[in-house]
Image (tube, rainbow, N blue to C red; front, side, top):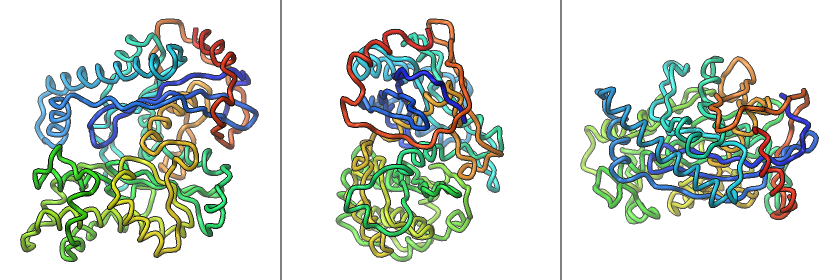
Amino acid sequence: MTYTTRMEPWRVIGLLSGTSMDGVDVAAAEFRLRGHEIEMLPLGYRSLPYPEALHRELVSLTRSEKSDASVWCHLEAETSRIFAEAALRGVEELAAGRADLVGSLGQTVCHTTVRGRTTGTLQLGGPSRVAEATGLPVLSDPRGRDVAAGGQGAPLAPVLDLLWLGGATPPPDDALSRGAVLALNLGGIANITVVDEREPVAYDTGPGNALIDAAAELVGAESGRDTDGALAARGQVRPDLLAALLADDYFRTPPPKSTDKERFGARYLRDALTGLPPVPEHDLLATVTEFTVRTVAEACAAHAAGLVVASGGGVANPVLFGGLRRELGRHGARLCTSGRYGIPPEAKEAYLAALLGFLGPHGIAGNVASCTGAAGPRVLGSITPGRWPLRPPTPVEAPVTALRIPEPGAFPAADREGACASSTWR
């Protein structure tokens, strides 16, 4: 892995839309290299919802086996427009009008894995429109290079998790935990990273919020969501349905592995319900929520978890989060959110996109090969030029071993203003 010797901070905008396909998350951060350590100073986070019509189109077309090419072109154009708007707002509202680069994970619409090998991954949210709107270079498609190297293109969170939690000093209560430290993301799909310097492990455990959303949509819940777990809280877990949901071979497949909500979505739920006595709507939501709880907790327990640091939209669901605390506690593990370690739970993946944007131009690998299954570490992403000629920093060989989040104000304001006003890419 390599990095530049320049100490000026880079101000990077991070973009992505998760598997819920409900909007674009944008974060801004400043990065500075100090020896073997990256400092990341979070500058702020926003979420820009998709127009309802676009959300419906994305959800319905990704479930359809027949899609006209012109429809996909329309979706790409509309999604790119929202990504460009989100990036521009990130620059103006979060980065005080000055940034060096945009890192984008895009909107994943297809991620196909056959017999443990990812055969393709497709993201919308084209970087050209983002570059045109902001004038900044854009690093996009970080998954593609990992897939080309024989990896699954997911999860990419380990590069953040390992640098961030591997060297973090835990608060006093967490320091008492015995066992492994795990990072958990509760998005549409849940994934974990086992923070282990010898042989890191990371993979998708199965559904996070995806099946809960599918159940909420099936029963006609408002906005297709079980807001705050209100429906699940009123129901009882149905053992017969839970057993049917748990029967999938995915949960017995060893890592590295990845999946998507097309596997664990509405069709999966309908198949599990086939042949069972009617399931009341509250019981349905209670059961699918418990399904996520069990699969996540069992995956964490398999790695002797002592501390689990959670992020993602599922953290805001008290039934899901409370169930995880119960089950993890039964296995002897503590549960907290990423906010305890300096990253807001809802913003972590957007900061991951920003970090990947920073790593690529500096020649630092963005994948962890033992987690994705790639042939080795790879510098990820493709660069779309901005308004000025590309002048990436000159990389030099040196290891990067930690990411530290300094206290607010750790970067002097004058230093930040000057460095970002004269972009390293101009």
